[in-house]
Image (cartoon, rainbow, N blue to C red; front, side):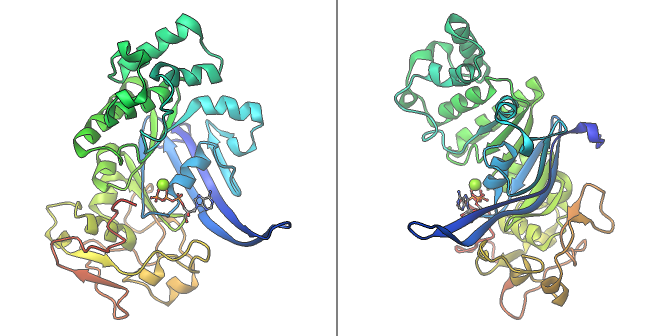
Length: 364
Ligand SMILES: Nc1ncnc2c1ncn2[C@@H]1O[C@H](COP(=O)(O)OP(=O)(O)OP(=O)(O)O)[C@@H](O)[C@H]1O
Ligand SMILES: [Mg+2]
């Protein structure tokens, strides 16, 4: 199941920095945002890799690197074994048929002045695949596939509800028969009642078409529902990745444990977890991330070693090989994360989420 040939897309040492420049004539780099800072990941064929993490942790930037929308600062991204960071323009165009993105905003991502049929048919035009009556037929097939009425081909986006508009986005993404779809907060802008419909549509399409997904969301329960494996990001790094069952049942990184406890969706049978670990303080600036472990200023388990030494992202004792954690002192089974004297993190038994909890995984 975990052989090399099972891997559809992998990233190794991916770095994406955004330079901040100042000056009117001669722009000089004064700082750089370390949006993604050394990420390794592998996504297997037909699976869904969920990515979670607080706002600004680099999820969307990583997604854009994987889809070739952002050139990387360093590292490699392999799709079917080919390093896409080294592709020519023509190679990149061909790659973009294999990989599509679905975005959060079903309102903003559709041009209100264009008819839905032509929006969904865009990829056919861009890639010169079909035109005329053939394109129309294919677009109507796609509309049917995603549960839209094909007779609404000539309507405008405003004539559709939010959930239907996201279906338009899904249909457009499917037009070129991609292998990988990167869903960046695909349901965050939708009513809860509609979210389930769109998520179930994505799941059905995955089974039907053998799609592979990278699924980014703030809502940890949504990620659990859709994902086979989950990666947790913090300040440009993946700090833990494991099967969804392992990660939610037995988080090893104190950050993952805090995120899950704040969202209160860890295994309900484990009464221990009724306690919420509250992360205090803001995420440090990605312009000047802390040295050593980036989470150490907020970590209830931090020791001197965490300040001095960047922890490797490897399987920890007792964990399966695909459960990797970047932490010198991973959470032990049944361990309670105690409060810290410095007041940086503490344990709360309050049933309600604290209002200003940055670790709650709430909306951005
Ligand atoms: N084009 C850009 N130029 C400069 N900085 C950027 C750019 N895009 C993203 N960043 C910065 O990179 C960091 C990571 O941003 P990113 O959007 O990837 O985070 P995210 O995890 O997707 O957050 P959210 O959950 O809010 O969507 C942030 O500090 C952000 O301000
Ligand atoms: Mg984002």
